[in-house]
Length: 272
Image (cartoon, rainbow, N blue to C red; front, side, top):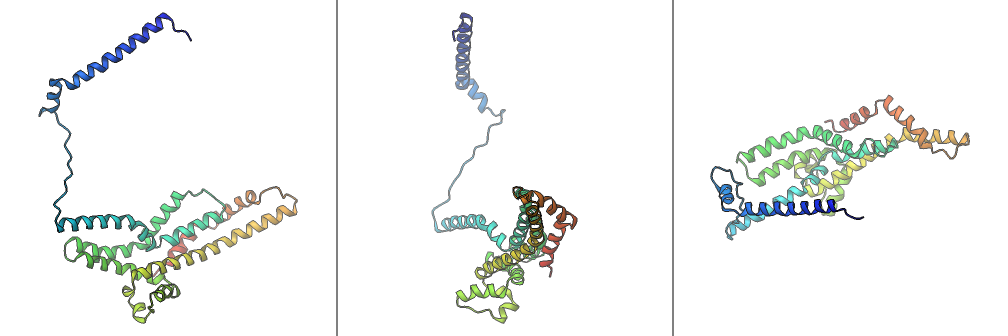
């Protein structure tokens, strides 16, 4: 493409104007009056930020190590809290419901996880309140030490997990450590080690969740069998049975108020 004379003149003028504007801005930035205006007391300046490290004595090193350990614990805290609450059973059962309905993305994962979190918060509220009243608040007031606060906070969670843990699962982990489940442990779950109680509780929750999921699958499996048999008897083998059975599944689930029954059964499993 050939440039006309008028276009070339406009291009040179634009380039010259841009260079002139850039030079003017540089001169303004380095001009003494401009620097003085930026540093004058009347103009608010951006506050400075400085990072300083304390001395290298044993006390400062110990405090630094404590901070690093605390950050590490906070990173692993969400996974630990999920395994120590009813979140595992709730999210697995809700996933079974979605798969039984042959729905891949409805409800989406964000909705299922959000619902599971709020159900977990509702179920664990008495336990959390007890841990807050007996451990967190006294520690914040300086009445107990950090070790005592952790021990007090573990007690209500151990009681909750022990109620939902099968004896067989707990004995599995205790036997690995050459220990036996005594009557004292059954009466006072606070004496059970957290390292053995948490995985045993998780196994029990998974077992219960899969049992509930199997019961949820049965009526929808019957619908799939009836639809598949009907389509084969009519010679419609090329038609996917899921396309016909899906509306009937959703209709059945809505008619029986399925979400209400599922959540009701989950809450009933944790009723004291």
